Image: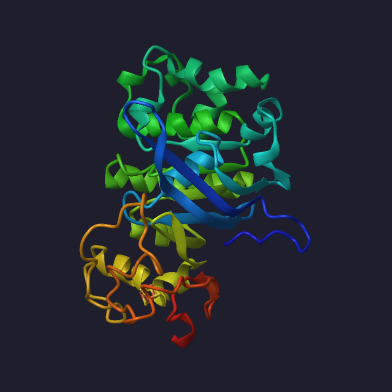
Length: 328
Ligand code: SF4
């Protein structure tokens, strides 16, 4: 059953507006900034408690940088991040610390995320100890489907799936309200992926957790997310309810991504044209619509000049394409 959206008037748990995270490119000798990698270039997102928003797109589109910026691992250059009504970009590091506890990140590589010199119980209890929270490693291990006795084991003694459960237990130990899952299933076998996905769904229901679910696996996204945001070259080009985005994608880039996803039977409503070439450099994005050099539906004379506005889509959500109003 889907959770209810935030009651009228209540702020969403997470509201991101105009987020920009750029990285300087410096020259060799003087270390002067030559140009900027516009990894995230004006992203808007909203996420309510108990919901999952998936962030999808090709490698290098900026989705991981969005997640890292939200949990404080990167500093935004501009924009607003409001978490539970508090503007995070204006807080001092000391004021930010207790808020950041409520936003946790689960990484792709569970082997790298756990310190090999710590027993599992110590690794889980490290965070709560730093924040003066109760240490409950045995209870947390059982909550993620592991034996409490595993607290005494070392990370190298665990399988990949067990380590990822430990990473989830570490995140839960800090009593978060939002978890950024950055390709959290990618390194796992398919059968283990299903177990972790079910675990995340159970935890979402039990704790009204919100997930920002960063993934390139569209079949997992379709099964797990309530809404989907599609990123291209640092921007959201389409966002909407999962069913609408998969059944009636409004943006040509979304259609190309769906057409490229492996499937057992062809999907007649998706064009067969696949994406050609690589995404342009985020140092010098193309003018007009950034997707126009690769777009099979580009309008001659318009798409290379006009930057598409954000337009509403029938069935919910938005699209950034000059063609959007002409679609049913
Ligand atoms: Fe393609 Fe033009 Fe739409 Fe961009 S604005 S996605 S180039 S049709």
